[in-house]
Figure 1 (tube, rainbow, N blue to C red):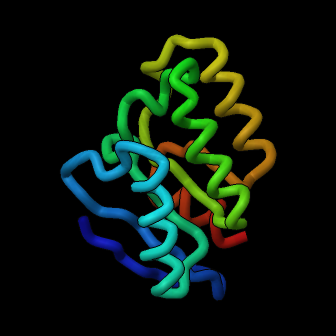
Figure 2 (figure 1 turned 135 degrees about the vertical axis):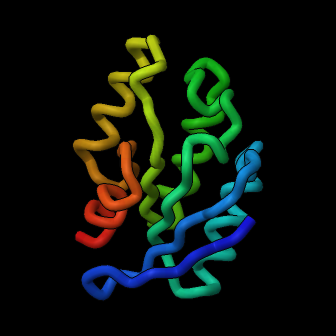
Length: 119
């Protein structure tokens, strides 16, 4: 796993780069928050492919547990991916509501992630 740091509009953003799943559980997400925070970033970009697929099945509660940690620590998150492949209405509603609030964002490109996190 590699963490790339960029600054957009004065906001320090970390992007998690990996070819593997790096977030299997809540502790992995906390470690990424800590590693990013150590480098001055409280705004984090993760890619869908790097997150345990159970995250996108809301019944597992993994998404809720992880996103609660981001909320508790006031870290902002953008998850980049193609979410149209998920058929769950509850997940689509969850994504819609998350994007409205802005702390957690589900976006299709890294550029869109940086734009949202830099506000």
